[in-house]
Image 1 (cartoon, rainbow, N blue to C red):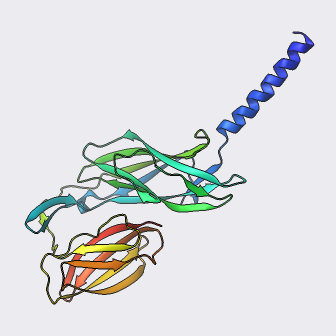
Image 2 (tube, rainbow, N blue to C red):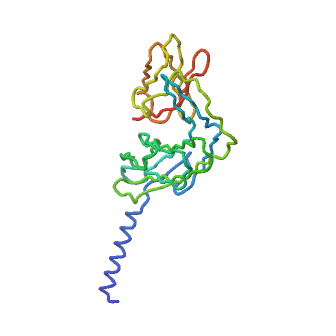
Length: 264
């Protein structure tokens, strides 16, 4: 090989190395409970015995639904030197039929959505804690595996992934058609940015207490609501973005419970 060819080969090799480092560099770190989980598999166990089939009757219409779901938070850290616009997507590796899974990334996407619509800006060396993955077994036993990837919107090859395996293997039987006390509808719209609404089947002089919890089980709000009209409005604009649980109780005990996502 001549000296000229050697020089060309050296320049080409350096160029390839630079391009390779640029395209495939990983500028993201993924954490679950402060543990680095890049390229790892996280195993989440659930109890399908808790996934009872409920009946919701409102104004003569009957809806059957499964309320139980498993959710997991993934924190995304940008270890690059400047702000990156981060997208996310999911990939089904093993799916149990008739189950559902979805993710929340600023907003909660429908189960049939596999990639986020908008990028989330994460500044250099900062961690975003707004991502959560959700699984609804809907009464089905077995393990579901889903891969979740986070990537730079400008350079999609710059990415980090984690696999979550949802294990629903504790059930012996599933009690069906348990009628829950649903005088008050589930909260809507969900996700919500400013005002939550509840419909009341039969307005009355009853007084209820709405208790809102964060996903760690800490009480963040307790409000007295009156059932004198068919529509209840609750201002949640002051709450931080994220997933919340709620319970509605009357003087006689439990009435309803559910969850909602608060968006920025």
